[in-house]
Image 1 (cartoon, one colour):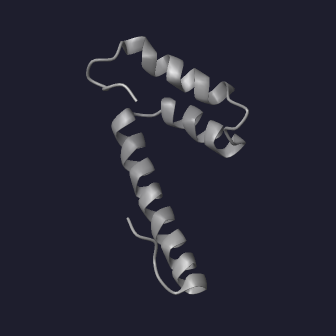
Image 2 (tube, one colour; image 1 turned 90 degrees about the horizontal axis):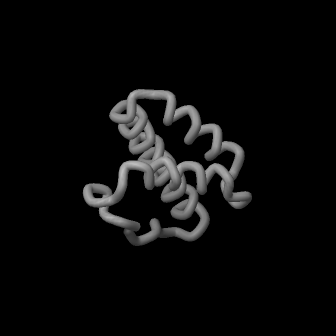
Length: 73
């Protein structure tokens, strides 16, 4: 992934469009991206990081329950 400080401003838009157009991108993720783009970017990022942390802890708990040890970071 290119350095976010040196890349062109429009490349962010192109990256979003490409992800939305990719048939491998889930409907849930497309909805989340569109919703995030309509919000304050700082708030959207903070919420996305909180969600990622929650989902990681949930996955670790499931893996531990089924396999006996958490995955290594």
